[in-house]
Image (cartoon, rainbow, N blue to C red):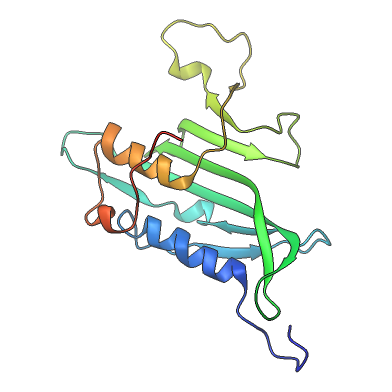
Length: 177
């Protein structure tokens, strides 16, 4: 809120627009902004779990899949412009799910929360493996680097054959960084 009591444009709103533009070739379901009622100031951008976007495969015989996107932003303490609070990523969930909503693969990072695994990771689910190498019923957590949503979406298009007309206008191809 600015000194005159009016709300100024917030950085999470511009980030929501950017993420929404990345998702536009895949779905018309909008992200919602869920401000947690805690003192931490964390903001979450997500698709409601009851309304996950269904992805359109290019091949008619390919199985239907759903995409779950959830991004958490924490106030970084800095300001950008007049009264714009800066936010930094604090976690994400990018999950590819079957049409029955069971997860196929998931990239997670939750810096805080209920899990002991606080680094970026890929979930490997026991039911996905041909050879049972995981000794528990829960997913194995394979460490990864920070995973950007653009990379996940590029992967869906180029490796899973998901149709996303016009994606080249909003998603840059991954580079070797």
